[in-house]
Length: 604
Image (cartoon, rainbow, N blue to C red; front, side, top):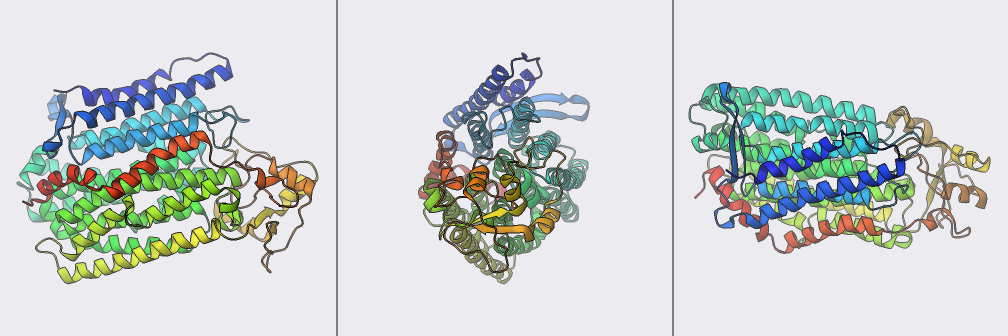
């Protein structure tokens, strides 16, 4: 028995428990201690995962390694069974890496800088609660990928819901409470259906050991029972993935979540759903998988096309990236639906690639929102390559990687998923899957369209800035709206839903400065140097409703925005390096996953 995995789980758990001890009364010292604590604990956890990578036997990637199998509830034959193989190892490392990078992003900047949730703010940021919540979240995410007992898997699968709910509900945007409630309701309802499916498997086989169940390949369960069980567990995993039409919680959650919440939600939590298909649904219920695969493929390609079309209609940058995840996870599900080694390998590769690329996208989108005070694309005004060339270049790189440019990590997962659809597993309709492949190909074209359209609006052209008329009046009078603990204007009580705010405030927008003329339908409001200076030095602003003024004439406002900082580069460069590495050398991942995939699908 190896204790490596218990230590890997124990470090963030102990780090979270240590935060329950009383702290001193010195606010500044307490803030510094929290920043160091989060960075050290998450860094040590990441270091342990690197040790796991170094000690892993790559010649036998299909074998469960570093196994820990202890009696948990002997009366029910439940065991605390942990292990790692070629499928789970990359996801464990991805989890620890992204958690560590989130703490780097939070801890290395100025405590009073924009987006820094660990510094003192008027109204309180609850920094200790944030560090505690992120560490508990890390325990649940890692445990999900290590668990080899179905009930233990379900426990870890559910542990992550409460911390993520609080991350959104406490540190999110104006409509954070509604988004958090929607998130918890969808995922809990999906979990109920998932639990019913797992109990059905237990009642038919008499065991919850995932390794034994995968080796049995459905023995003891009739095809009808397997189909019902696959449908139940599939719905539970589809909500978390998310699969169309169970995706509607995702855009709101991403839009309202703080930057680190969006990064972990897109980079890790969505992968828990797709991991469930690879670890539970397909190997344990092969007959059910074969029966439901065409339906899974159909929902996957609908999600690809729907997500891409929805992206074309979005105004908010974070919301657009959220809908792009629906499309990209559609490719992952399509790969699983082919039930071929090529398709399933593509799905697992796409899992990791999406986690890296979308994490980078949300980091950059969060940095843009912190600087401009909004993520509304028309309000950003374009011309970012002129104002913030490094930040705009990183946004361009992340978008190009996400649209699947060859040579970057986003290409291989989509290509292998489409290749698997070209030649699906025996027993599946090839003409139907050729239609799926064609629709997936259309999705890649639409993906390129919405990313390039977004870049043309945000990074290119001459800059125009949108300013909220009441804010101009307040600035001219010497007063500015107050901000809440998240840096959002008026978010003390959670604010009004975004849709209501848009209806009330949209007609009052005015376009200023940058050389571009205001749209004819928009009433123009002149910005005096005094109001420009006041707005340029103000704190956060209401997303989509206000933005700082920058004008070449006054030299104030947005022209003073800083480009990429050192702590941001420290958090983002590892993601850029891995996107390039896996894009240029996909074998680094495929050597890990392919032996396990062939075992799971019964291929030679």
